Image (cartoon, rainbow, N blue to C red; front, side, top):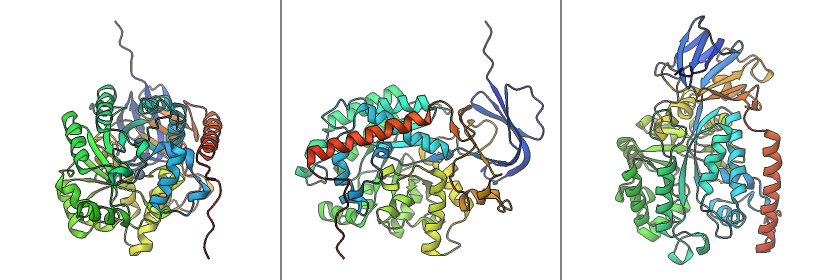
Length: 475
Ligand SMILES: [Zn+2]
């Protein structure tokens, strides 16, 4: 029987190939050969017979970016006037009333929307944390809808089974009727892991477990979640030390700081990553580094909600494994991965001076850093034998003109739309000339706007709250 030969794609005469390998090697006018779903070689003038040639002249080739924190469903509730100026708790409590109107179709469409935007801005691997499972619809297969969307659009996808296990009556923040019981959550985690978690190096689907935060769960359930994750060898994720409110809440309820609570329940280690970590002290940062616990830095979200500035230069200095996350689209208002690098860089410079963070450091966070945090050894750098997750950016355009002294820095410091020319995931071209190849972008836009409008209308009708109006600002 004849074996089907893997497709060969050649990125020909690429002006710059920034490998992000440990030496930070950049090749000029080199070819990158992809065979099947793997990078075969990076060489000068490759003469192999191939199925497709993509011209690399004028293009910067980088590894696909890795996003380590998101809530894709929030893509349908961006720019809600009522919470445009709200901090985390007020923001989440209001938006919860709109998120109660999520349906399987809304989950599928918001996932396509967020993944599409990520892919257009250079992201090839992403996680997600979905914690809303409304009781007025069949939410039992929400994450299955997400996997379907990821498969349809071609993204490498490692969502977390998020959860809210405590409500107001337990002294927590979420309304009681959106909370799920512990058994239901853990059973669903196990079902999803068994169905989708693929530990193989080039996996397109993996799972993680993520109780949302101490605001909505107990240390006891965090421990149960960790036991379940470790039984299956999957990673653990949660929000930690995002706001000063969280610190107050933990001190009042548990008598310790959020990080100390994590230490006491064995939630540190290479199989754990936290989003935010804005409010950590020096000892806690060193402990993150010692234990290999991963960090997802979400600068836009922290700025948008006024949560504070995570001590990233200090973390990098102490050896914490830091990655980058766009966070939910309702606390960032974009899923722009390249934009997130720029925002992160500028944030730390305004905070701690111009040498706080180098462009290479922020790109490392978004590539090799993310790959390490999510445990995907095969992605994050361009090297033979690694997965063919490759992004090409056309540098021959106005926003990059005059900046080619350092093209890699240019993608962080310059740029207008941040939409890349080509995205290749697992050897497949998913963005070509700045357009998604597998799904019609216009359909996503049309459906997302329709569903967002319907959810808003139902939420206003049910609650009597006009989310479309901004509360009066007191002068
Ligand atoms: Zn988040």
